[in-house]
Length: 399
Image (tube, rainbow, N blue to C red; front, side, top):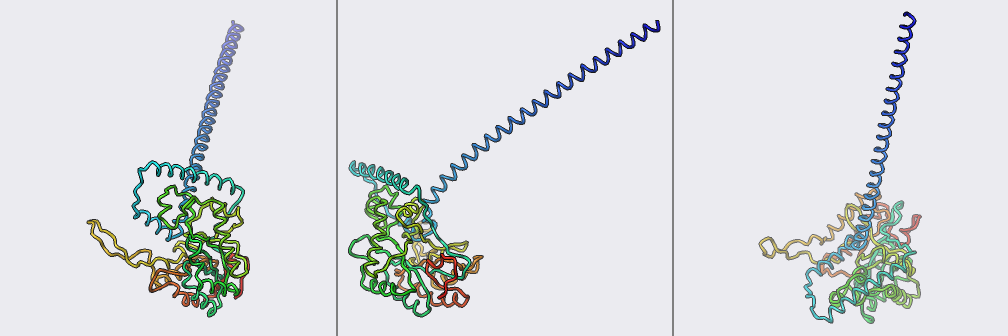
């Protein structure tokens, strides 16, 4: 009996051991399955999240591309008060859309012409990259004082400043009108000063286009009536061939007058430029577009063309009120703005490019008259006034 009892105990123990082994195997299997399930769920979650990120990134890139296109097309309105003035002018200009069938046909034709021209420009410029330069070398205390010709009324003032202070300047030439035989590039007094200044080493000349059109609008505008009424729009779509002609005519007029070549940089009227226009100009030999500097204080496009000190505005009750024009700056206000601009910028006015116009509609308090004080103040601080070519190079240019 004792032997049988021992055998029974051994059998029971064997059963217990076998049962425990089975339980352990089931637990291991369960743990393995749960682990695999968790890993699969985790990987699926990661995959779904990555797909979501990819979709979101694509969406963001599309939005950025759309916004960049908008920024390019509106860049001029951010850079130029003159362009903002044009937009306001068009808001005030009430042009009724004609219901005439022939006008509708013409508008449709103009739409197609605009789209076709844009495709041609994009194809011609796809391998080129134009530069929009708004500041020179910030390592040196040099300022580029630049002037757009405008009417040319103040060329004599500039010549006197050059002689008195030994400064160097850059003048961008344009006919300022679309006519072939009249405009600022045909006035005998202007031609006399340009010819005289070209003999000096202190004046550099750049290209400001022949007709002084707003290029962004002249390329994209699909309203025939606006093209017909607004003088800053070309009457027909502005093509790449016409752009080349706009530059070439200024070059030819300058060379005939001075026997010298224009520098191969340009500034478009009203600061109306975008990436397509920049690249298109690069394809015809003009890689560098010269804008003007700006920082958190504002733009160095000095508002000498803002001549209305007061404006009439209507209050909430519809009654007219005379208010101060917020865009108008007196000479004193402009000087204070320039000094503040220099003080607030981490590089001072190193490499700054300033824009003024030779011919202002102002009858008094002309901004050209602030230059003697400004030049003297800056020179005392160690700044030199140089040409655009010099402000862009990598050395200190001595006057």
